[in-house]
Image (cartoon, rainbow, N blue to C red; front, top):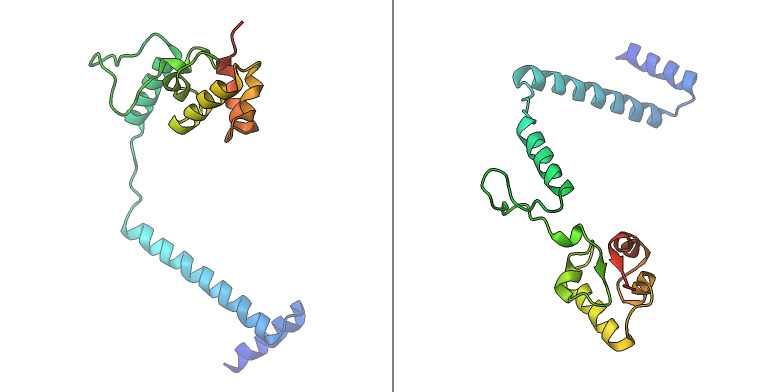
Length: 157
């Protein structure tokens, strides 16, 4: 124990630590070493399971292919859309915000039922939108949401 105390004093002088600081450093080193030991024991007892991602990768590729084809709205295997994945046609065509119904507006990115209702009410109270940028006057549509909507909206000519 005496040799440890001498080593600790030498350590403190060399690095300029107080006695308390050196104890904290030693505690952290001991905790790190203990953690490494526990990790090594666990990995030797219980190997890390591997996971085969091929099924999810092929499903991702199939869904991506369906999205790229706007007219394809059916699943190749069953002829019907799966419950977990619905393709809305409004994603692929431009929506005229001056004539669109609430249901058509819901298909826009970031627009839900309540926001679509606000857009229709704003249009009824203030008249047709002069530009897509006028959507920023609708409560709840900020710059970020507007940037998502602009590519799929028009005011018609």
